[in-house]
Amino acid sequence: MVLLDLRLPGMDGLETLKAVRARNAATEVIMLTGHGSIDTAIESIRVGAFDYVIKPCPLDELQIRIQRALERRSLRQRASLLERGLTPPDLGGSFIGESPEFQRLLQLIDRVAPSDSTVFISGETGTGKELLAKLIHARSSRKSRPFVIVDCAALQENLLQSELFGHERGAFTGADRAKPGLFEVANGGTIFLDEIGEISQATQINLLRVLDTSVFRHVGGTSEIRVDVRVLAATNRDLRSMVRKGLFREDLYYRMTTISLEIPPLRGRGGDVELLARHFVGVLNERFASSKNIGKEAMETLRRHNWPGNVRELKHAVEAAMVVCEGPEILPEHLPAAVRGTVQAAVANGPIAEDAALPTLDELELVHIRRALQASNGHRGNAARILGISERNLYRKLKEHRLLS
Image 1 (cartoon, rainbow, N blue to C red):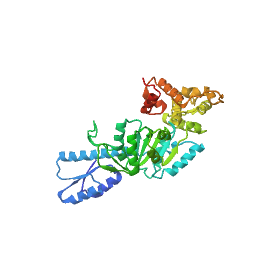
Image 2 (spheres, rainbow, N blue to C red):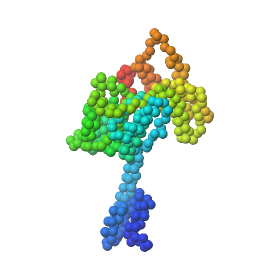
Image 3 (cartoon, rainbow, N blue to C red):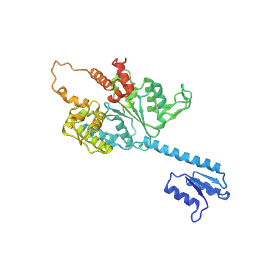
Image 4 (spheres, rainbow, N blue to C red):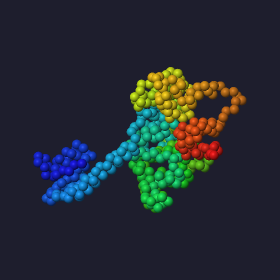
């Protein structure tokens, strides 16, 4: 904070102001001037001063001006932090893999990212759909504008519409003031709708209108709001099947899938497990200030695992092993039991008798959910984190499998 007189020996106040602003643009400057230099004081505001006061100035008035200047500086700092949080960096270095399927995906991203087309990202839980969406934004012309994430499965339906489109004061109980929607926050940038398969028919209709016209209304409002937003969406559910069942609008499905990107599961990516595991070890060594490595037997254990939780599961497995391991080398016993267990069950990958009855996907899902609940002592939030899904998604699955008490 600088109080700067316009009349100074050697260099006048205006020149000094320019030098201060060149040295540190965040510094707030209040000019002090006499009655005869008001025009110059106004010029100083154009150059970058916060305000000016005419001498003699009461101290309480000067204190108010200083307080306002400091408040503006604080607001600018907060805005800068929020802007950095909403504009993710290029995370291309986090996409590790040499398998042909994964390389084709990366090449497609390079072609898709610079466009303004809507992109639908599909893939199993834990494959990195949100990370891919951030990469698309970072490599687009909107990279300096906001990137807003909406977890559609984490919000109740009545809150989701308010979050997406905003609301007017009095639109519903508790709406004591108007609130802008996340589409407005993302204006000029990108909005990422995660778990898009969880939204209701009513929200689907409103979303279709935004995609077609770039126009929407606040909940409880009448004025139309126009935005310029690129939409990315993702889900681990089968939207085609949902369309056939009438759970997802067909017109919205075709509008959302202008460009479709499918992230291959980790189990189908050959030697990428080893590349990713060594990458995570390097990152964690830096974080923990250690120098550990994965032993040959532990790496073989990682290769044999089926990775139902994909890259996210691998990352957590490596981190758990790093924490448990006391020596320089990670051994099989340092890996989580769920990862080690599939080595003994490797016969599952062997030949299957012709009359053998295989479990259905629903049966396998039921068993896996029960194991997660058991491992978390019945805590649904922790079980959802183990499974790599939202708590709302887990609740829906518990209802489907009739596991709710």
